[in-house]
Length: 205
Length: 227
Image (tube, rainbow over all chains, first blue to last red; front, side):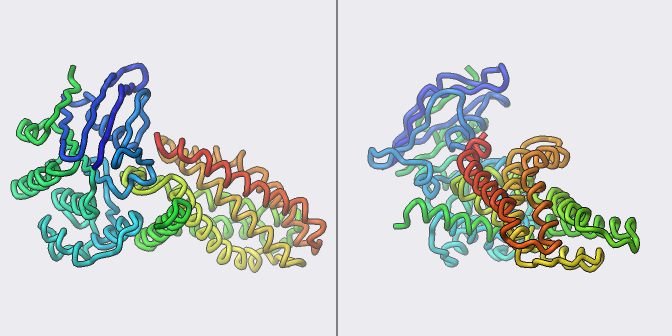
């Protein structure tokens, strides 16, 4: 059982306050949608939740079975897909997978990797360097790397950007599956995607 | 289950292997460093002509070539991650210390390879004779460790700035100054055939400086790496 708590998160750039007093709590099986106009701070909040940047004030804490999880123990349990998060374009999809699997302490499972690539519509492109992929294919490859370790916490920032209709359907299936018994956080402006959140935080206010 | 200590050591090696793999594909840092070193060496050689230089001049020349060659390519290790937007990807999968050690190992190997190739050419072109080669190798080893530590730390700092190239050399120079001063002095002594006992103070400085910089880097890197 996993839990995330955010307490009074506040962030500002120079003197401009982006958001303040953001608090929420999510358990396994729950989901949260972050909405807001461009520049409202959705991406900043996502990056704070993932500990990629430090908030000016407030805390984000992760718990597993009521015990606090340190950042070092969190890495293998979190998956993030966002436009600012790139894979290594000069490596092949397989080399990227091997790197992420090894660094997350997982056994390299080529069968699993191939099945994820096939699921995301990238079958047969495992040995191609990622710079040869289109932007939509790159987005699909990001999902492969973010999901292959079955993360307990999945965070998606603009989840369907660059994706065609079939890609969008795939991502919606992934979100439905994730929110069944794990934690899902997504930042989006697509009204169609709001339904995936049991809770919603609007950063416009 | 692996302890946290072993985890970050293991992950440092994985980061190092990944960087080696990327470097083999792009050859950016290798090309930058080697082309700079060869060009500088050739320019110096042409300007000097047939004059045989004393160790008082040869030692500073060698360290100037090594320092500026290092400055031309070692920052790439972090700049590449920021420019290609893979820095956040890396932040999300392992601890800052693993990343620092992995990147430092890469720079250390790159600088060592540069020295292995450049120093024989330098010695041949400048007609350098090193009387005490063991001391000379010890100085180079400690100097390389120190120089790569400074370069890795400063590369992490400047990677997020706009004027990266200029900042890298400007920030690195004052911090690397103890390495340059001791390195030049001890190299001159080694060229003149002095033994370990006379070079010991310089070797001690090089060693202590490297230990201090690596320790400080491990303490500070998390604050540099996480914005």
